[in-house]
Structures are given as C-alpha cells and as structure tokens.
Length: 202
Image (cartoon, rainbow, N blue to C red; front, top):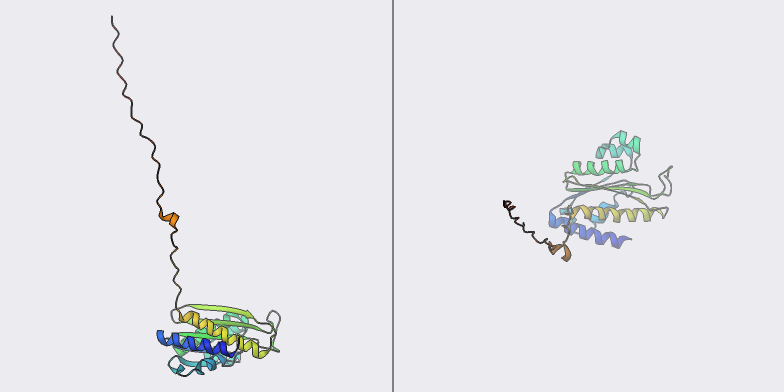
C-alpha cells in the first residue's frame, strides 16, 4: 500500500463527498498532516476539505481539539479514548460532517510497555452520531511505512462513514419457505345416533 492507493482512495472519497455534499476535517498526530495532504493533493478538494489539525503534542490535543487532560493521563496519547476524543473535537470545532483522527507510535523510538512501535489508533466521527474506532499494530516496519499505511486506513474509515449507515438487508425467503405446508386434515368422525332402549313387553 503506497501513494497510489492513497491517491485513488482520496479521489474516490472526494467524489463521494462532493456528491453527498459532505465536508471533512482531519486530526493527526503521528502522521503529521499526511491525510490532509493526500486529500488536498487532488484538484478541487477545497469544496470538501475544511481544515486539518496537526496535534503532535498533548498540549496541542487539549488546546486545539478539547481532549481532556484526564483522558491523556489515564489512557495515554496513543489510545482508543484519545483518538475518539480527537475525532469528536475536530468534528465539533470545524463544524464539518466527517472527521478522522490518528494517534500512534511510528517509531523507531517511543514504545512503552503494552504499546509497541507500529501501534496506531484511528477514530472517525460523523455528524449523525456514528463513531468508529480501529486499532492497528503494523509492527516495526519503518517510520515511513507506518505513516503511509495509516493514511490509507484513515481514508478507508472516512469512506465507510461517507457511504452512510448500512441498512440491514431483509432476509430473503427461500423457495421452500414460500411454499405453504399442506395441513393434513383428519377425517371427521360422525356421531352415531343411538336408538333409545325399547320398553319391556309384559
């Protein structure tokens, strides 16, 4: 997955958002604005892309996106909770329809117990209340590769939300279920009329 994947996804996402009149904001930490860069590299993206937040430090996450200090203290910058707070903050502060957030450890340093190099948390939020989160452990594949794969995943998540809520399809009735089972009726039993006992002759 490289630049060509990101470019193709960016183009498809922009076309879909343009058709559905959706706007986008990004909130990025470890990718440093690469998602916004991939999208704005496509001509005509300005009618979809509103802004991008690059919140590399915890102070920036608090000041620009409204991430609570307690969230960062209790869960850490690289966590589901922080990624979700970043996405919601970008959505609200930019007043857009869709927002995506990325926070992770691109390496080569920065690993902590339980949080290895290559761990990235993603969150995407929609104006209608839908929020999705994903965690990827890309491994120590190199800083550039972690960042490039993170861009592609973020674009995929935005595409998922841009398509709208998935309506559960009604289960199709099989041919067998459409056939009404024949009910076998038991033969009617006719009541036998009993003759009254004859009076004794005497």
